[in-house]
Image (cartoon, rainbow, N blue to C red; front, side, top):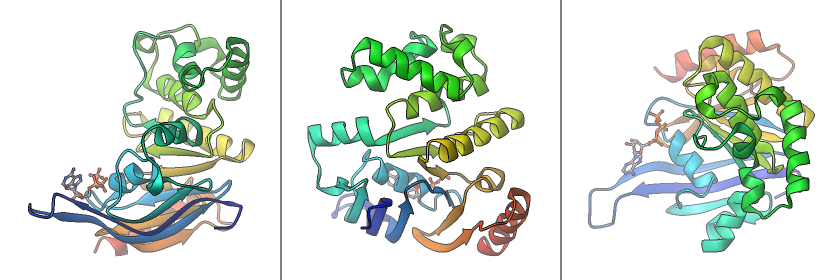
Length: 252
Ligand SMILES: Nc1ncnc2c1ncn2[C@@H]1O[C@H](COP(=O)(O)OP(=O)(O)OP(=O)(O)O)[C@@H](O)[C@H]1O
């Protein structure tokens, strides 16, 4: 793995079910890398293995075979506390349903990854306010999730995902519960995070509009990478058309 590779996946396989039970192989030998500062999309039809892949990358589940290396750590070799430390430091997550804690303010939610690491409160305050400025949510910090719109909740969730400067930000359909305006704002925000902070972003989505914000898209079909698109110097609208065309032929 070269130094500017943030994610390296080799021969990744995942079979669900015990050997003496009914088994299903969701991933059938995936190989790809994500470079530092790259914005990569993972697309595929329902059931193609997108969430399974994200679970392997984020260490929420373990592969049956193969390796996943994130920022130099072979996560398939880690156990217990090592895994917990890895997740707390190297990965940021945003989910479709925000996953904010309702009893905490936006500020407290954003600070969670730092609190879990035992960060001193002054350092934590500064980091929270910096990220809140970057994501234009400084005025929301004292509010509780119930007082926020879906779009605002997802901005808070994005702030929580990057406050500890992870090596990579992963999103599982993060625009799925948003109206089209908020979805657009979140995608612009992910682009800002990617460009300004040089943070690698991996976005799992079945939505071609969301995917068109990526620099490169991997299309998964039946547990394998079926094809790949690169945006190059096309503008986003042209790339969107290309994604639609690819999906048209890909799903046939
Ligand atoms: N815990 C499990 N046990 C058995 N099979 C599973 C399990 N989790 C997922 N699968 C199967 O693995 C395949 C891939 O599922 P996965 O959730 O990764 O797909 P996906 O591409 O994320 O789908 P969607 O877009 O609908 O979320 C599916 O056929 C699914 O039924």
